[in-house]
Image (cartoon, rainbow, N blue to C red; front, side, top):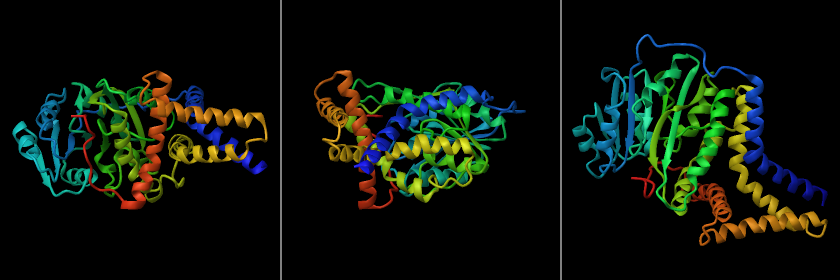
Length: 376
C-alpha cells in the first residue's frame, strides 16, 4: 500500500504542478533573473520578409487574406506574399493570384507542413513569416513581429492571436489567456516552448524542413533552442481568428493536433534533453512533457485512489473530488454554469491527448489536414 500511496500522491502533485505550480515558479524565476528579453539591435533597413500562407480549399477567405497581407504597414518592396495551395479542389489558387499574391504554388496534396516546406524553399525573404488563411493581422503586426530578429540570437518569434468568441460553449478563449500569460513569462526566462499557427516568423537560415506529421508550433522552439537560438513571444504583434464555436469542435481540433504529437516528442527529440539550456529544459519538462502526460497521470491517480480506499478517510475525500469533477464534466453539456463548463472543457481537452494517441496507433502518422469547423 505504501507504493500505491506514493504513486497516487506523486501523480496528483504532478498534475497540480504542471497546471498551477509551474506558472508560479516561472513567475518567481523571471523576477529573480531580471534579464532583458532582447539585446539592443536595429535593422539598417526593414528585412525582406516572405509571408507564407498554407491553404487547403480556402476560396472563401483567401482573397481577403491576401488583401490583409498587402495592406500591412510594411514596405511593399520588402514583403513577398506566398500562397501555398495544398491540393485544393476549389478556386483557392486562382483567387489568390487575382488578389495580388506574389507567388502562388499549386501543390499536390501533402499536408500543411509539406506545403510550408515547399513555400519556404521557393521564398526569397530573410525572414519567413507564416499565417493561417483565416487570420487577420493588425496593420503593424508584421513590423512588430520582425523587430526582435534584430538580435542575432533570436530564431523564432510568435505573435498574439486573439480568438473571436462565436457565442458557443467553447472556453478556449479563457484558456488561451492563461496560456499567453505563461508564454510571456517563458519568453522572458529562456524562450517559449510553443507558438501558434496564426502569426509567427522564423529566420530563413534557421528554417527546419519537418516531416509531414510535424508542427511548426511545437517543433521550431525546441529545435532552435538546441541550435542556440531563442524563441520569443511578441504580444504586441497581433492577429485575430474565429474560435471554434462548440466544445465538441474544439475537441475534434485538438484531437487532430495530438495525432502528430507523439512523433514530435519522441521522433523529433523534444524528449531528449541534449542541447537544451538548463532553464529551457525546465520549461519543456514542466509545460510540455508533464502537460502531455496529464491524462495518464489522471488515470494512475484514479486507479491508485480506488485501491487505497479504506486506508484513510483522506482517500475517500480525494476519490469523491475526482468523481465530482467527472460528474461536473458530464453535466456541463446541459448546465451552462461556470464550474460545470470549466470541468467539461478541462476533461475533454485532456482526453483529446489520449484520443490523438489512439488515432496515431490505429492510422499511423498524419499528413493531410482539415479546417476546423466554424472558423471561416
